[in-house]
Length: 483
Image (cartoon, helix red, strand yellow):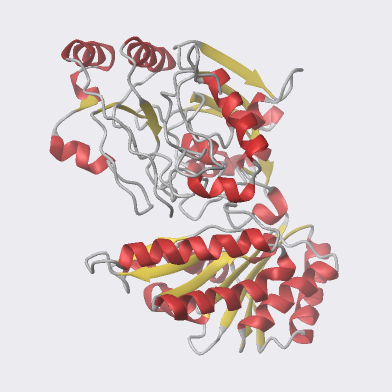
């Protein structure tokens, strides 16, 4: 990506360190270099080390940590499991990192009202496991759902394969408890009047507040689930099939696409049953009442055959279905067996632009000399090109970044976006000026300043840092320095 601003790293005074120890206890602090090295990165390609990592157990402790940070003018960033893919949890300015690993309780399961209250360190999948005996589940399912936490999901507004039918995280949050940069504790609810603060804070990447409790919506498990594997001799056939399914007004809960290179890596790693000679596969899932699902299976089959799909397979058992999804959910791990490093992108395009976008990605791969495979949420046009490179070879990381920027620029040019679920973070913030007008970015900066006037919460994220003539510089809101 383009050049970014350098952030001054302030040393944490000894007195502030001692006070942090007092808040969370000796076992709740990491400050040795070897320990801090584990918190300098997430799932992206950037790095920056915190000065100290603290692990609160309660909202009160989070508030006290934030008050100490405010008193000493220290930057602060929250962190869940560190599975993010845009640098959202990387402490770009050093300072204090608040790790939520010890705030991992499911506080309440309220089946009568179809909701649960959880702390930010709860693992996504653990919610569905906890409520499964009652016949319920939590819908947003990022590929990292076995590791990622709800606090991180709220920060990034995470999605997942089932976004097509169920939406992203913000569609399933009913209430938040959060701490502002002055240490004050607040709550907001979807049931009450007033401004939609849940919608504002979900996806704000920890730049406005630290979330300390989340009320999530629970959904009833469907009566019938069917998973279909459509096998294609050409990637364009898969793209055409997605468009045909949409044209027939069928709404699967998920439509995932893997190209030939990607499916071969996945099959070698997981033995999910993907044919290695295919050019692409579609993984399509239907849910609902038994009769409706059975009818839609036949409609999907007809749409696939109409678009030249080579073979349509319907999983016969829950075990077969789970195996197909195991391949999809473990795809990134499969890539790690093949390439020393890889760079995952997250652009969005209209469904009608999937085929042209795949062609453009192939052109970028050829021009850059890098291998790029594709795995993505085809149902909503959320593309995830995976750029393979060797970080030990000088210049390859820069080539991968440049290739990613070209792909995102294409997504914008065809009416799409630079992110669908991974967030902006420090990876794409300098591209925000290509997507939004200067006036829109100025409005966002003013809103950020209302919550965080000193620009201490996760600085250097989301908004451009001021390296281009049309970009706004992120800076504290002080007298004579109004945004």
